[in-house]
Image (cartoon, rainbow, N blue to C red; front, side, top):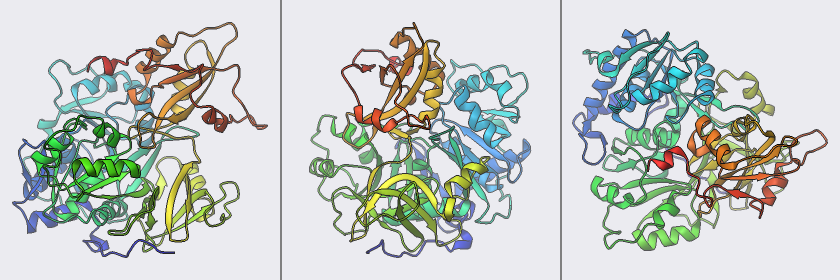
Length: 553
């Protein structure tokens, strides 16, 4: 079978450490712009970025952070996020990316799992931390990155409080910490399917390699400009955009959030040559009214995962036939296993060919781990040919690590198939994870909140097909009521909205007399998914019930 072409990384493997890559460009192209916050923001050169990372590294040491300590970052997109992230890695601390939407148990679980000593947050987010202070005993220090004036700093019972500007050191020299590629760099969270979210520990080597793959996929160079409005607490913005640009020696323009209406406007103003789209956002962009200047931009490549082939044609017709779409398939745990070779026609639905220079892959029966026949769907299992290009563990969850790596292959939980030409196709999820508008969702965690509502006895959360044409999901909660009880769906939505991020709150609810079960009393979610949205399904959006975050828009 044909595979993805071999490639030569930009840096030798003993230099696969973010501070070393940053320092290389700071020495060789010190005045070249690395990052801007919005197209109107101050340009930060490679040299300036390196100095600010050094200052933050010294500042973190000043508040007691040492090599190996975990530093949580709970911030919206901002330059400070990048400086904290880079500064932590300068001293060998481990960056922990925490969603800025988390609250309650959703904040407490990851914090307790990684046992971070320090967390960076805005004023408003600090209030959520204060509400969970007693439930996060390992946390010692909250550093406030100035938020809106309307949000006063909470009074903590135990945590020390500092301000971002006060901890930045005047010393911009290199902290001179020896960091090996195999040592931990970052922890990102992935959705649990039969339990809480898992903490994916990424070595410096894997963090670099994942970004290097995207540099190869989009054939980025030093003259390219990459923009993103996706959140920095996700790998997409971190190693598929910011770090990708860093390796190439290019320029990245960061925005507070994604905007469908200003998609091409941003590309035009920033001079973007490379863009990144995920999931349903392509449909959101195409739903905006066409403009006469839609083709007035410099974009030549778009990494879109996934995007339907029909939508690609419409997208190119509107924004330019010269745009090349590339795709890849991977996970935070395993990097990109499949990528689309440049200039090779891709069959409809294919996600790429195996990056066989670095990985092995098999499609197996999820029950037996035996390979299935060519063309038949099965679970994708993978392993690496070179050390530390995949994650080595779920931090704090050794039993989950062993389970995922059974038979010495990493089990992805995703069902794929492969053809004789070496093209792989995503079929379905073996696991029960959901993905809504670019956000991974743990059905287990949503079920726990819904089940805590007083009148509900049982709950099973499933994915149903979204309205948008990008293969993503909407969340449906199938519920069984306690004997004699009723439920007000509007009150149930409000209950969920107070206890989970808005993107997790189910759109659909349906009352069932019972949940279908196997002889071993496991819920047959396949049956529920097959039923989908029925005439008895209550639709939050059609009923006009809005979340608090939606009311503010």
